[in-house]
Image: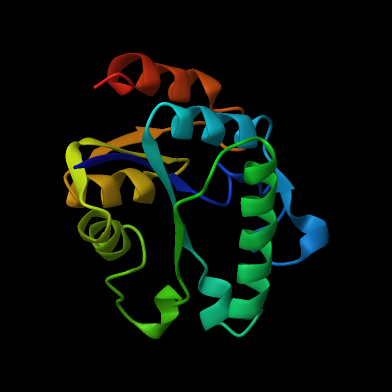
Length: 167
């Protein structure tokens, strides 16, 4: 079985200060040391999987192609540092469209990844900047870690690696 760290995108991977929807390349600014933090997790044997709500797609504000372009940039920058983003999952629906099981705080995207990548739930974490991220982690029976928005998550990554990196 694999160990994994799930990470929320907007507010954890990239800075979302002053913007609710991030879809324009010019607005996509990675948070401090995120590429290095992802690389550290990879080198410690963790799969790194991004989980994100992208409700602006459902509202017609931007497209799946916009989202995929930003994800490509992220993966390239992580690769430059020697790491890998295993997979990126996002919910394109908006809550105004009705209930959706893939939109956080529901856990369908986490559960899909756990099954697909044979992840040990006892060795899985979800780093997020909102209550809904932690709620999704709870529903998937993995450890949720609430971090401050738009900050360097190195202390949290180092803590995970220290406790679970050698297992």
